Image 1 (cartoon, rainbow, N blue to C red):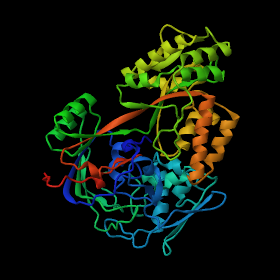
Image 2: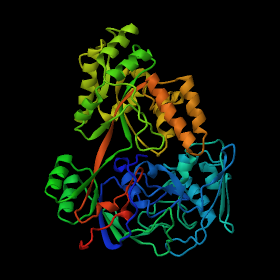
Image 3: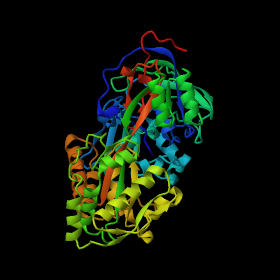
Image 4: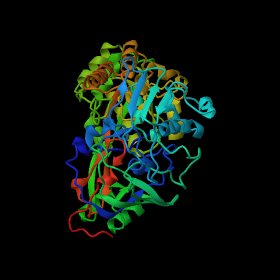
Length: 533
């Protein structure tokens, strides 16, 4: 699950401006896949739906690191978690109603999870740790690990093992309760009644849809009031069309990739506004810890010293910030590293100490985009500069072949280009897939360095059992990031930036961009005196 959220350069949003207005017009890309919370799986859909379907928990309506914090949405408060991390208990808020006026029942949550398995939803694996969570039990009528009481509005969930990511599962759209009359098939064309600030009032699928205020929604401290009365969402085929509508005043926000040069030109002409943010991603070079010369930590450290990360930022058009961290700078667990300042002399010395001078190396990379190829060529030059002997031409593969290839032992990929994008705003969803030795046995291995350190594995396993991201747990994740980078199976080099394009009538003081869901439509407001079209 690839999140699209930004950080607003790490600053938490100012106090919300409550300033209602009739209509917000939004453009999204053709990646929108479904309006059913049990099936929706793309950023384009999630950005619209997170103000429609609420789950027991959600993410703070804020920018920056605060927006990765889980907090109650439909639940009264954070769950009571047993000492062994296997039992979660919570109670739904009193008086909850769907947008059709029907009451929300605790058993609706149990049905929503069961429905994921009946739908064969890609979100179902998030709940596989629940006792009895499988297709067979779902078809028999219940999941034994979920107990509910409609009278007390209570929910008890029992897990087979403690899980650091289960609270994120409860905060996902997949956990949104739905009426038990909801069919187990895609409801995009017949929208499910909702619990959030908005309901889906009109569907023009796949061309778009309209959100209207849900008159049964009651705002809370964690799910606040919203500004637009109506949100018209249109699906556009490309950045050119999106830009034309923005500058013409026919759209207020575009969640569509638009060429940066075109955006900057329009901004200079004061035809739109831009807000830059750091994406939840990390671009890095992997080094295969099982193959020489990168089986020696000194050589891996040398590669880190050999990277001028500012130069790599230039290669990516300046739309990035340099990094030495595996975790992105959007989480409370992020602590900036300063382990590897650019130092070719130190890198050469480490290669000599490891007895690796002149070692032959094949560099792996992608055929596209151009920046990826340029980064691989830069890496090859730096390997030459520190005394290694890379092959004259990198081994470039198309994206359709590349990721499976570098994750396979048979490819014997020594070093190469990679990036990671969050699937959940949790440090576990970074360090486990990129560093855990268990990943290397999987068919779709994402541990491209084939890291299998007993110390790192043990630390990841311990933290994977911590059900809450307390300040202490975040500090331990940060320490693990630092520990991993001292061992250096990876050479992170940048976090990409993106830009949100908004019309000139939007008041940027109302701009909020969540780390997971992106721009919060409900928080946007107009400049005073702007006419609503």
